[in-house]
Image (cartoon, rainbow, N blue to C red; front, side, top):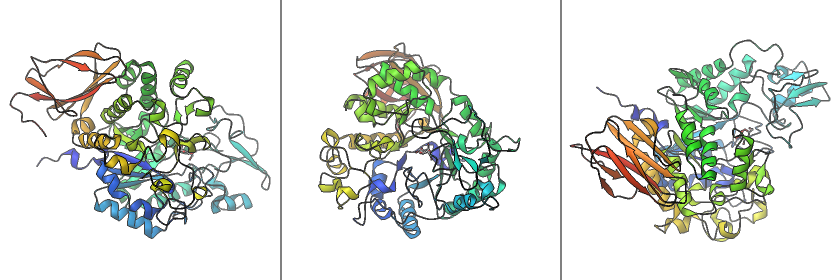
Length: 555
Ligand code: GLC
């Protein structure tokens, strides 16, 4: 019997869709999105081609970091619904073949969490050592601020107990002490609850910070990656096919350690920050070289593991791995106004506004995202080309409500806008111009195009499971990739420049190639030997499956 990896490794081929329940759809008319409203929209997601839903934090929270500051890991924020609503959502999703993963935010808690309240009320509390304390914290360059300008250091003084506590993020987000075995047990218990309620895994927040030992007095000398491997084992015992998708914003060589050894054993998926950042540099320069070089230098990943590809997410578009001049180039191209920039390293904008709403260029960028080596991750609203609202502070500018229709309230909510989490943008990106309902009815819309792209991606296992490499296209503006899987070959070509061009590719080892089957627009290119000459238009893109002598064509 042959067992195909495709039946198990669901995380390698599919489309992950990230959303915040609070801003997706208000089901009860109070102005706040909720689980019931989201459940009503599951068919939109499934119909579009999404295979995995990633929910941003929905647990009780004072909401000082948009829910990434949790006060109870075992409950649902009452503004968003109940545990019962959560189970209905998961069940509805499963009924449509959609998996659900959720954020696991355990680097820190809210300072309102009962554990921290107990810890700071009394030095002898059993929760004291669940956090990281110091009498006189020493300056440590390894402990940098995550939100420069917004944060004032990483140690805050607690008057009552006369010690400092560590917070790598905001002062209202005290770091948990992962060196404490009781904390690790509790993290497993939290994961255990949600696994039991049907989730297929977790997007693990801020992994390097979670495993950070600096600042912890008498920290054990064990390699902290071991803690991650222990969590992975626990999760596998509870649910064998559950995944850990990690936020590890580090250079790729360092990221590799979080996958585990050559057989894995750590995170299953890791967001590829380096490729994302170099893609933006390539877009700015109209030159594929930066992203081509970064792709070629990626370390190989274990058989069960995969990169997660993205162009935008719920945070600022961070460009922290670029050199200063490179970052400046991106700022000049995509966010020249200081109001668009954040923390000196990123842009608080969505993709279509950065690409001047140029449809050719937007299509090229998403075609690239869906053909990169990795599982593509979308942020809600990307499927219809939503823009940001710069009137909304900080990173929240890109987290405005989903635009469902041109009706009053944009189809998000019937409540007055002052009760919403944030107002939608206006102008060219307002709900009257950009919304799901109109795009569903227009075969030429971005949404209709995205649906075709997602369907094609899901039906092209070579991209998710294959061995890939960057080819020499001879044209600096063009990224050419080849993916080989079970005797089938797919080529993906992307022209980063406005100028149309022609590339010539050698199809090594494919002497029996007779044609290229265009997977996106239907044209078939006859070949004369294992060499392909392909024309690419303005920001052109093409996906081809190589047709080989005697091998039947796939649909
Ligand atoms: C991650 C999240 C970000 C959040 C931070 C603190 O970086 O992506 O939104 O503010 O963690 O939890």
